[in-house]
Amino acid sequence: MTEPATKQQWQQRARELRYPTGHFLDGEQIAGGAERFSVINPATGTPLCEVAAGSATDIDRAVASGLRAFKSGIWRRMAPRDRMAVLQRMAQLIQANADRFALLDCLCMGKPVNDMLNIDVPSAAQNFSYFGELCDKIEGAVTSTAADALHYILREPLGVVGCIVPWNYPLLMSAWKVAPALAAGNSVLLKPAEQSPLSGLLLAQLFVEAGGPPGVFNVVNGLGPTAGAALALHNDVAKIAFTGSTTIGKQMLVYAGQSNMKRVSLECGGKSPQIFLADLEDIDRAVTYAINGIYGNMGEVCNAGSRLLIDKRIAGDFIERFVKQGRNAYRAGDPLDPATNLGPLVTGKQQKRVLDYIERGKREGAKLEFGGDTPDLPGTYVNPTLYSGVTSKMTIAREEIFGPVASAIEVDGLEEALAVANDSIYGLAASVWTRDLRKAHTAVRDLEAGVIWVNCFDHGDMTQPFGGYKQSGQGRDKCLECLLGYTQTKSAWIHLGS
Ligand code: NAI
Ligand code: MG
Image (cartoon, rainbow, N blue to C red):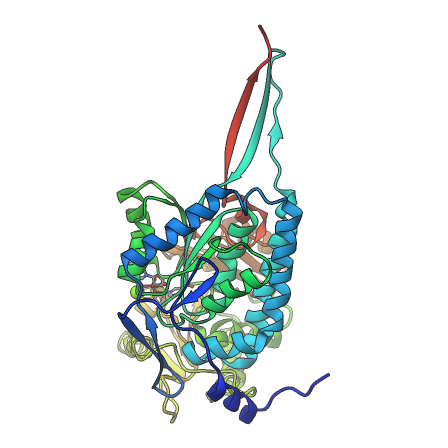
């Protein structure tokens, strides 16, 4: 075992790090045109690099490359176990490049380097191994038909899949889309978020190093309204797999209607409730989960447990413990320091957005228990914040803040908790904490959310469908159902009579 790297070693590695800043086309890193956009390191506020801003022409070229590869059959008609082997090697290469990935995402969007090593990188590798294993388990069917016919159903890949991903888990969200799309035999064109454009280029490089054919996995960097829109409007793109804001998610559906009726899967915002009933078993354990559920990844998490719905019988005690434990659990610092668990928010714009919501909470009469301010550091940090006395009508209880801000709402029993929990346009995830089996299952039945946790939060594995009800989106990531979403069915009716 080698010693884990120190802060100084990570800082040194960051200074020495070299990486491409263009696009990835036909198996190669390419520089891209003169049009560039700046990436700022949010921990320091200083420019990190200038990256190629892809145009509609760049998208066109990359879609054509993906379509050529698709039509050639080099990937979709490869023996499934050979495709599997490529994706398994890719999983190993992701893990072998853990430090590089950790640095790239850390420098672009401020994620603590330890979170990258413990969460994002292993989870990304796991997506490739899980979906890799499924390559030869995609099955069609033969149905019961009359004696004069044989009917079978095939599952085929779609074609070129456009993946438009956000900046909060740059590598991992790319893996969530790219791995199943590739496993099903599609070509992929990845458009990373403009805040975090570097790790996608390395991911595509590793696909080729793992033995993936050139052209099957291309990357075009660029801004949402130009490169992203050109991709989503493209007539030769068969599906858009999107994670990001609800506003842009809806726009994806418009683009599909304005172009070729492409399939769209959406994983958008959330305002996930955690319900803490009076009979819960272990209040300290529940408080710990509540704290990690909202302050982990700086609260920049689609399923962040941002609404704490606490039974009034335990609310005082719960909040007191939350304040005691929560105000110091996450410490702002250099994300390159392995001891740091709170990095800056992704941009100055995001910091302002979160601080504006914090102001709004104050104005609308919520009680600030702690936080609400920024630490004395150069980056775009916001301190962990807790509001109590929040009502379901307040803006901070309704809108996705995407920062380390928790809102505690007192409720009177399960029925009221469920009503408040469901009083949201969102429905990504929810949890309920109780010892009562009947209440737990009632909550599972009645909560309008795609992912429900009982006596835990954020647990799961690759078999778990991840995605939302209502305006949190449609379609699921991870899981077998997700893989099938990158296929289409073909019916073959064979006449056997005369
Ligand atoms: P966004 O939805 O604008 O960006 C996500 C992706 O969509 C990026 O790759 C971006 O380039 C692309 N995009 C943006 N506009 C586009 C367009 N017109 N056509 C095609 N592609 C486009 O999210 P943004 O602005 O970065 O963050 C705003 C808020 O969205 C956050 O504060 C948060 O509330 C929410 N959000 C939710 C995420 C989630 O995981 N569900 C992830 C990121 C943001
Ligand atoms: Mg946006």
